[in-house]
Length: 314
Length: 253
Image (cartoon, each protein chain N blue to C red):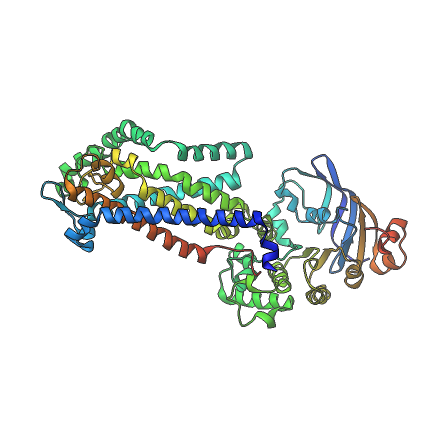
């Protein structure tokens, strides 16, 4: 039977084409991992895999390399950016999908999506010319001066009030990932069946109660997927972060101080890397970045399966 | 003269420019079952949804005329539709369990809305409502399981239990058995007869036998007009209008 239905020449060609394309994607991903792993092999061999991961020195002159400052930098900046971006993104999604009149909703949704289309170098420039002076003059300097007078012990934790550093990078990163979290949440909210909403309205619910008790629980899978997409975006973001974070190979020690992320250190040092071991260490950082992204996606996928709301028993 | 729980006076419902229900005046007797019958698209569901202001959710719908609940117009200025919907509950054509909630939470969802937190009271209401919906024996051992794991007929009885839990004065049912198998349909029809003592029911049905079996009064709708209204037995045995006769004898619709 099966052959009769699926045995037509066109079907066979189509199936074969799909299988080939699918295999090609896997092959390319595998090759990338292989290349990064092989390139970073020397670094892993010199310092040991865990030695490299946990090593906190990054010194090209002494040929000492460890990824720990960048791993921490990536984790801290992306988690902080996500924490800042999540609620505004969700609020915007609810407003657009549930509350705003159609013309306003479409305009706002369009503008939010446009944020995702801006090149990240533009965010970086905006950060340098607008955000950094703002943060420096209105937040860091007053705080720094205050602590110099009242709590000198804090000064070391605050870091130099230059505006360039983790805080500025986190703020720009948060802005950049809002559209990812928001547009997936918006679509998920719009897809909640009308029957579900009406059933809650019919019990005497107000609009907000319908959103809180029916719409958000039903859409939670899509909302979570948006969060993960935004997080992945933050983890991988390179240009804007490199322009703002200060690029220090030291362990990040303060909110205002300079730091670096895995992506930013690669962008910053790759072109001028001297000697095999520095290059190999940068490739090894790239390999770790790939592992981190993979881990985030696997965990997300696992959670998403448990969260998603289906149409009920089938 | 039996007392009226609800009444429409010259009710017209416009979808944009088209009237889906035209100038309908219908009494709804207290603790009786009123059935609305008629072919698809005749306006019976549109009429039903006007009774608890569900049309408010759709901005293109406009209502004219009056809908009285205990003598007060539910569309009068200053009346909160949320309050009306608490007093006039609704069960939809397809079962609508909330998929993220357990059986128990589904049934008490309406009580949660009004802020009931007392666990004993919630448990008591859940049991009473599930018993009233003839579902208690089937689910009493798995109240904390997801409601979407139940069969379609059970899900629909969950929807009924949920509507009953807030003790509405009137229960509107929009073809509640049309998505169900005959055995589940039978269970829900039996249930309607039992519920009659507690609550006033208005039921839209596609199924004339069902209207004849369960209802006390029947209204026949056609193209947005209410053609005929009367005691169910009289309407089915001796219709006054030839269109009613044509419909109930199966000549159209």
